[in-house]
Image (cartoon, rainbow, N blue to C red):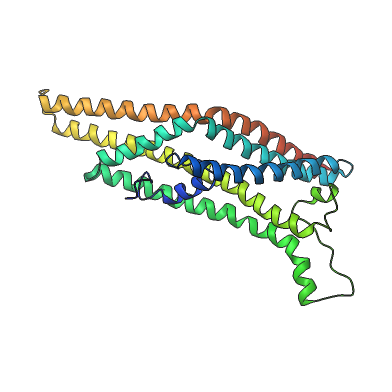
Length: 284
């Protein structure tokens, strides 16, 4: 097993979190470099989105269309900020996962860990594929007139548009079309990577907590079968192990809940505003 990866099933999570500079075992230098790159693209992309939305205030349709994308940037920022300030607790959770895999390196307990970790890896890949795949239609919008100019040229060029129309109200986008286009692609990729990396890692924590409760159930079942009415030393040791496993599972869940509860309250508020904007635009 790669010593820098919690389990053999978490390499994808490691890659994603390393890109945004948030993998717990990442070197300090690597974290700072990756974080600086991420900060550059998220801050500039967020500026163009927000300033463009304000500049497009006179066009209510573009303004309302832009507002959910700006709120999505806010959600992404909340995720990143929350994950960063809880980095120490996140590292503790990863270390706890590593210790559990060392403790249960074989037997039915290891099979349970493998089962839940495999499911976690599958969801990570599907989730990443779905979100990254959602970029393709957005990327094709500004590329369509460029392709048409090549395959079906006209006397005048086809009108070009950026992925986010509000930016066209902010500056002379035709003059800086290609730099803005590339920046938009990279900025969107950055935001999606932050969302995917953090959400899937949270899902890994949840799956591992479920695995620990499943292992606890296995211990209790074993104690119930082995106990013949007399509480012997072996039975007592098994009960101690059950209590210890239960406390570990509860501690892991508590740490996770403390980490995410504030984040999801803020995200809920942002999503309510976003849905309201969609409804207003629909009625308009």
